[in-house]
Amino acid sequence: MADRAINSAVTRRGFLVGLGVGAAGLALAACAQPAAPAPTAAPQASGKFDWMQAKGKEVRFIGLKSTIEDYWEKSVPEFQQLTGINVKFEAYEQAQARQKIATELTAGTGTLDSFRTTRAQDFAQYAKNGWFEDLTPYSTNPQKAAPDLDMADFFEGALNSCKIDGKVIALPVISGGQCLFVRKDLLEAKGLKAPTNFDELEQVAKALHKPPDVYGFVSRGQKSNAVSMFAVFLHNMGVDWMGKDGKSPSLNLPEAVEAYKFYGGLLKAYAPQGIVNMGNVELTPFYQQGKAALFPDDLSFRTQFEDPASSKVVGKTAYVNFPAGPKRNTPTIYIYGLAISSQSKNKDAAWLWTEYLAGKQYQIKAMVAGVAAGRKSAWDDPTALTAAPKDWVETAKWTFDKGDDQWAPPVISVPEARDIVGLPITVAIEGGDVKAACEKANSDLTALAKRDGLL
Image 1 (tube, rainbow, N blue to C red):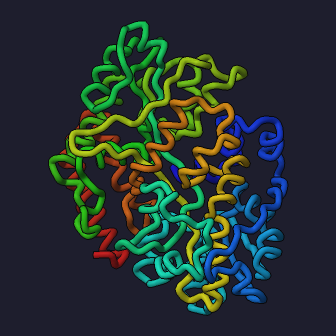
Image 2: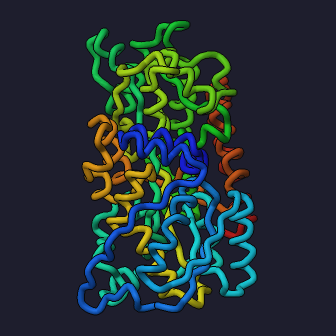
Image 3: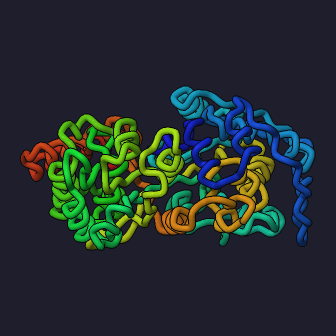
């Protein structure tokens, strides 16, 4: 979910259109190398803070090659002028970047200072090995924290996604999340309202289910691909993948079994045949063609549904908060943060680079350029939201504030874990023994976590 949505150039263009930044923004998205952001005056120093406090130092950054890294790289000259710090900027394809970061941190050379990170992919391994620098002392020190930092301005869910045991180990710089797409024209025709809880979700799906013309509810059914969409059902039933303590795999709990049965049951009853082989690639155009009434997925898909060149549902979609479950009301989000290596020899310089990219003014500029920010002020800025519909904006803000970013089990071997926990989804859709499938998934996840050294 996260990697696809965040690192896709198509998604970035779609986000720009959704924000309504106009022709200049669209031209930026279309370029292989985005134009450099306009220079911004340095925030006024407050107290003892000085952007030049690490002048002459160097920061080596490794990122995941994407249009977002392209945008950051264009900002390097401005940062260097502001701080006197040289930035050695590197970006690699995702698998290569993660392997390179892990290899260098394992070697302990201290030559890597800063990197992009996300909980589901990295936190288990990096925290276990002590590779994260605790940023809390930096963010609370007036000599190190710029006036532009303002930690209270981050969405609560986004900031919590960058914490381990209450310590801030990264600053949110990119946000993504899930909402429910609802055919409001079909609702109005039936005199119904958008669902706000699981019971209503099933009721509305049933009421609008008129196959083969319209299916009541579609969502990812393809095993590992479905995990990031199923996560919200699990969490809203009151269950965490690995338990509250992160050390107690919980897929065999009655509430977890119920979550699998409910998700699989919705797809069995109200989705088209073959849903077990469908992911977002197949379902997005399916919704565009008017074939689905309810569809939960990534917020950025809005622009594809509102594109008159490819969509039959232009103006017919409501963008609403994901419905609450019986135990929680927590949407799924995915957050990327900037972290500092605990081995870095230039931590103060790396911190300035981190807080610069995460600062208020930079995040607003990035938002205008199509990078979904993790800050409230960026989502409230009129220059970034000139044409975005109110329900989409409000749903995004609520999602980033309330969200849970554990869209996959927090282990080191994430792809393998997704296959394990995705199997009961298939079993549920096909009407098999869900309880037995959950027992097996829980046993296999426990074994995997032990192999990863987490239990």
